[in-house]
Structure formats: structure tokens, C-alpha cells
Image (cartoon, rainbow, N blue to C red):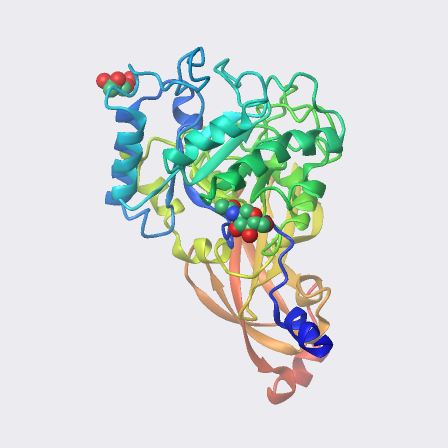
Amino acid sequence: MLSCSILILAIAPVIWALDNGLGKTPPMGWNSWNRYTCDINETVILNNAEAMKELGLLKLGYNYVIMDDCWSKRQRDPKTGRIVPDPEKFPNGIENMIEKIHNMGFNFGMYSSAGKYTCAGYPGSLGHEEIDAKMFAEWKIDYLKYDNCFNQGRSGSPLISYQRYEAMSDALNKTGHPIFYALCQWGEDQVWNWASTIANSWRVTGDIYDNFNRYDIRCPCETYDCPSLQGYHCSIMNIVNKATPLVQKAGPNSGWGDMDMLEVGNGGMSFDEYITHFTMWAILKSPMILGNDVSSMSREHLAIVSNPDVIAVNQDVGSAPANRMWKKHFVDGFVHLFSGSLSNGDWVVAVVNEATEPLLEMNIAFSDIFTDNHDNEKYTWVAKDLWTKETTTAARYLTANVVPHGTQVWRLQKSMHLSHNKNYWVSLDNAEYE
Ligand SMILES: *[C@@H]1O[C@H](CO)[C@@H](O)[C@H](O)[C@H]1NC(C)=O
Ligand SMILES: *[C@@H]1O[C@H](CO)[C@@H](O)[C@H](O)[C@H]1NC(C)=O
């Protein structure tokens, strides 16, 4: 008996996450907010879903279509107590729209707030968790983004926030219908420490803004340790700097640190800046939720979000977010080195150039990439640049050339042990990396 139960314990997969079977990898999809804010209706949602399918984005993994705030009437139904979809925005009914989304092959995502109202002032679900969850399950939704507005002061400590978000987690579970549960609690009350047992993902930072690194007082904190005012209008470098330590609490057995919806295609950043944005979200294992008008996106922007090699890093089953190994002053910014292992033994390495000057021929030492795995330094690695698709074989260091505000990212595949390489001793003598 005893040995039998020990055996079962030993072979059972370790899961510390919310156990609803979802979120093995970060979710991918589209959300209406960044582009449309409150200006949504069934045409907008269905047109974007159709465009995603036509452009091949569904096939690439973008399989959640998420409708954000402003979908309901201002008051609950006085008789049933239920939230009422706005009949003008959804003349054919919300369930009809959801069915169409499902028939296209997508999952459907809904929005509410753990507060008296949603952020735009529509009915929120605080105190109505069970009735709302039941309705969402009847509608067969697959994802719930759960915001933090009008929380009536039930925040300011991890336990209070935890309990407020736990109520919806329990209510969703009770419906028996698996629903990806995405906390949008803006990274307050150290959500990264407590969300994994009740949610599949949790926002680690304030609301994104379509800008590379502009300072904005509405996003007041520059570092992660910002307990009560994460704010909004956060540039992508502000988010990267804050999220980098926080996503280390995320991973395949817990859930995902959400750096907010993508801005690619909304026009506020250059091509190279969007490359940095997309690459960072991918390797830090953020959910990858598009936030633009997909039906009118340029080929350039489509190419960014369609890069299968970068998506493969984000969707690699079983691997954790990459780490930042260092950050060094360069001209008017920093150069950042990120490194992370993938489940098949490959590594992902990224160099971000935050400055307005090009970074030329910087040698990135393997000892910095493989800080915790020094044995890897004794191999040559085949390095594929995931944007240019060029492949090189590297020993002891990689050479980075990065455009201003850009990012170079490689996938490294282990090749040969240096002792099998006749140039090994020569290269030892000529160590030329920094
Ligand atoms: C939805 O909004 C768009 C753009 O504002 C508009 O052209 C369209 O007619 C609206 N559709 C419905 C069903 O209200
Ligand atoms: C509800 O929670 C239990 C226990 O964690 C889990 O086994 C089950 O799959 C959950 N059901 C849903 C629909 O999330």
C-alpha cells in the first residue's frame, strides 16, 4: 500500500497551477481594447476574427478572440440580476456572435471587472461572481479577462486582493466549463506571488502604451517594486524593465506573467521597435494578444506577428521565461542581454539595443549566456537569427549587430564539443571576446 502511493506521487505530474487544464503555454489571440477601446460591436469583433483566419494567424496559434470592456447595458436586468448585452452593439445576440467565432475555429474571450463597475463604468462582477460565471459558461466562453477597476478599496494587501480574485476563480470552476482565467490586476499587491493557484495568467504591469520608451508620469514607476500605482501609458521598455524580474515567478507549472496586449500595427512605434516589442513579449513568455485592426494591418506588421520562429519560443511547452543576464550603458540607453533555455536543449538569446545609435560587433560571451550552465561554454552552437534567418556557428561568443531600438534574437542549437575541434586550443589562446 505504502510503496504504491509513493509510486503514484512520484509519477504524478507536478502542477502548482490552477487546475483547469488550460494555459500549458501562454495564450495567443486578439483583444479589442488597444485599437477600439469602447467602440466595439459584433461587426468589429467578427471582422477581426475573419481577418485573423484569412491571414493565417489562427493557424499560427492566435486562437483566442477576446472582447474587452463596453459590451453590456449600463444596468443589470432588475428581474434576473444578470448583465445584459447591449442590443444595439449585438443586434443578433451575443451568443450568436460567440457561436460564429467558435465555428471559425477560435476560442472566445469575455471581459469583466472584480469591482462594482468595469473600467468604463458598466456593471462589474464583484459580489455577482456566481451569477456572472454561470452566464458566461452558458455562453460557452473560453477565457475571462478580469479587471481591477472600482474595487471598492478591496486592494492594498495581497490577501485582500487574492480573496477578491479567488471568488471568481471558484465561481468559474463551479460552472464545470473550463475557462482560461486572466487576472488584469495591473501588477498590484504582488500578484505574481499569489495568482498561480487561482488563475492562468496575471498582469504584472500597468497598461501598455504604443511607444518605445517615452517617460510618462501616468506610469510613475520605473522599477518593479511599485505596490499601489502601476498606472497606464507605460512604454514597452518601462514594461520590459519592470516585468523581467516578475515573470520569473511564472512558468509552465504555474501560469503566465502578462505584459499586456500587443501594440504591433497601431502605428506608434517604428518597425524595429515593434520587433523589440514582439521579441520581448515572446521570450518573456507573456501572453501574445494582438491589439490592432487586423483587417487593415500592413504586410510589414503582419510579418512581425507571423514570425513562426519567435512564436515557437513563446509556445515552447515546458520552458520558462528568459532571464536578463546583464544591462550595460550604451550611448543614450542600455544594451540588454537575455538568455533562456528551451525544452529540447536549445537556447534563446536576445540582445536589445535601447540606444539611438547602432550597436556594432559586440561580442557576447558564452560565459554570460550560460551563467548557470557553464558546461555549455565548451560547445560550439549553431545560432539562427530569428529575424534575418541567417545561421552561423559560434564558439565562445556570439557577435551582435543591433539597429537602434532593435533586437537581435537567436535560437542556439548545441553542436560540437570544443575538444573535438582542432581549433579548440587555438581559440583558447586567442580569446578575443570582452
Ligand atoms: C459597428 O461599428 C462600425 C464602426 O463604428 C459600424 O460601421 C458598424 O455599422 C457597426 N455595426 C453594428 C452592428 O452596430
Ligand atoms: C475545478 O477544480 C478541480 C480541483 O482543482 C479541478 O480538478 C477541475 O478540473 C476544475 N474544473 C474546472 C472546470 O475548472
